[in-house]
Amino acid sequence: MKKNNINKLATSDPTRRDFLGRVILAGGVGSASTLLPVTTVAAQQSCPLTGSVAWTQPDNNNHVIALQEQDAGGDGSVLLEYFGHCAFKLTSPQGVTMMFDPWRNDPSGAWGLWFPNDFPKSKVDIGLSTHAHFDHDAIDRLDAVMLLDRMVGEYRFADISITGIADKHACSAPGWYQWTNAIKEFGADPCPPNNPGHMDMSMYVVETGGLRILMWGDNRHNPSPHVLRQLGNIDVLTLPVDGSQHILSYEQGNEIVAMLNPKIIIPTHYLCEGVSITLTTLESADTWIKSQKNHNMLSSGEILLHKNEVAAMNQEFMYFGANTKVPVA
Image (cartoon, rainbow, N blue to C red):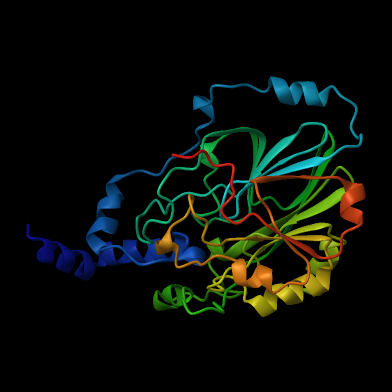
């Protein structure tokens, strides 16, 4: 069959049209890029989505058992490692390891290529995802003893406490790329209360080493007063602000910083050389960072955070830039 006839069939056939609609509504539109041809999307129907991969993991839970037998608490530094985009590995003073929001490309192919390489296979105790968009939910790439996918509520283990707080994804694109229009074009409302499920969010407050660290994910800039009360005092805040202002605008990011008054602010969801590429439509966070009074251009993909040092800081913007822990291909 000729290519133009295939395209015609894919767009005229109701089943294929419905499939494309479901791809748009569920395939990671919060991080949308250029659509691939409909024929590419239709071809993906024959490729089943991956289920649980835990049975393929080569390692076991010996480390978690050892942690379980120790007394909780203790003092020490928290290690924060950046894996590009919104992915962070956090290691508690006692040695509990957590990976947040590992990224992947959209499995449907509808939103184009964002990451030229797979997320590195990573051994951690706990894997976490803030929401069901492709650039945040590659939990199959984690050799994790536990997975907390979009968790709401409280989880405690060893010297960590994680609180998941339910809210909503940013639903109005403040930048030049109006990715929210894709949701509207298929008859759905990206904004609450009638948003589709992939626009739901779980923010995570991690307490360890005497610090409170907030993984903001792609949350909206104006959560309810009830949500803000649950967030409480924050020492370290991650925020999705980039030059294209894809999720949050500069002004929205500044408003959140002023509202929460964290000691440290770390930008996420920006174009990161060596991890993401131009098709993301993202830009670097350089302009936003350099506009801040206190900013630190980090020279590596990791930082050690101790509560005494952090306590002396005042809205210090720390920027990893292109420095990540992702192995060089």
